[in-house]
Image 1 (tube, rainbow, N blue to C red):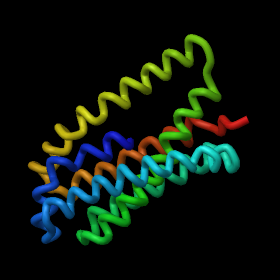
Image 2 (image 1 turned 90 degrees about the horizontal axis):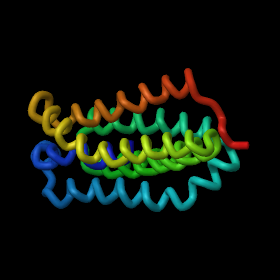
Image 3 (image 1 turned 120 degrees about the horizontal axis):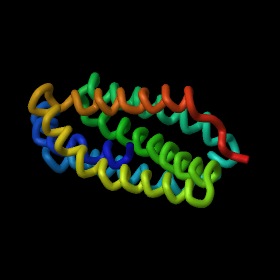
Image 4 (image 1 turned 90 degrees about the vertical axis):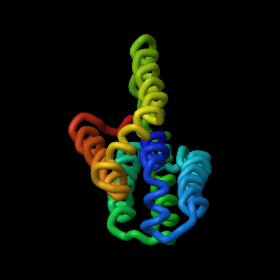
Length: 170
């Protein structure tokens, strides 16, 4: 989710700058805001996940990420973009740290190796696939469509988590 959210809107940066009447560097700052908030948040969210449970906080973060993504598409404003990208970064950090901990809590031995390898493949593939998909969405539907997709994907993950997941913290 974090790698995907970082790269999917890269092809839309020029269109966003035009639409939001901003410079390219102002739009690029939204990428830095997301990355910084996600990176810094990871230093703190682990203890919160351990204290209050991975399942609830991760699910809440998926929902928040979804809502915030849709807000970015609906409210074309530079300040809103910055604030929402910061919230996206924090919520992505919660999901990322919770999912990694989930694997460590739930699996061991060969299963753990299998799932962490799969997780690594997805982690490495998302930033490669995201700009291609983002470029297609930009060309076909405009820059807002990338954020609408970023709103839909976490909801799908949330539904699957609610159906098949559970608390993994001991």
